[in-house]
Length: 272
Image: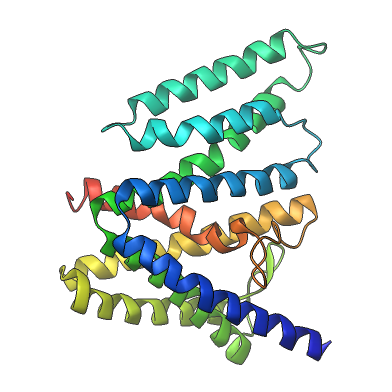
């Protein structure tokens, strides 16, 4: 068992060493449209994983609409200055779902369950992933800030939890997470945020601290959300596309919840 864990850790480290420079190059040097395309492709892979998780649900998934949404929705968000086209697309999606149910063989059974479930499945991935590309339009430094704060939070939380963890956070959702790990992760991420701000961003320390706390909290919640969905579906990992790391959603679960929080703060509070 120990040998297996050691091998998995080696694979995990090697994969990280290969992917990290590529990710940094993409974030820092790539044109925003190129970065959007990369995020778009990653979100399509995540959609495939999400459909596989959702298929274990008692509610039937409309794969055609899910894929149509995954292909179209990101463009309605990214290439327009407001969310009006996206809102229109959401209305059309909801309208189609109701029509399909209306003309199905059982139009009065489980209406709310089927429509709301498929609406959620169709939007969850393309909506949340696109915010990573929207943040890149504001500035690559904010994408780096988001990624490194989340990474620091996860890393410090893990090692603090292993060393000191005694009080479970939400054991029914994620048995491995502890209150001590949460505190350690937050402290470590705030330290990383401080140095990021000092050498790259240059904002008010108070503002950056508030942003970092919001991002950390959203990241933890994102991690717990995916844990809930995976446990509900009876799966350990969302996929196996990233050697040693599991699936796309396993790596992006915190980022895609924290990204909208950071984006809306930068737009509506900081006025970026």
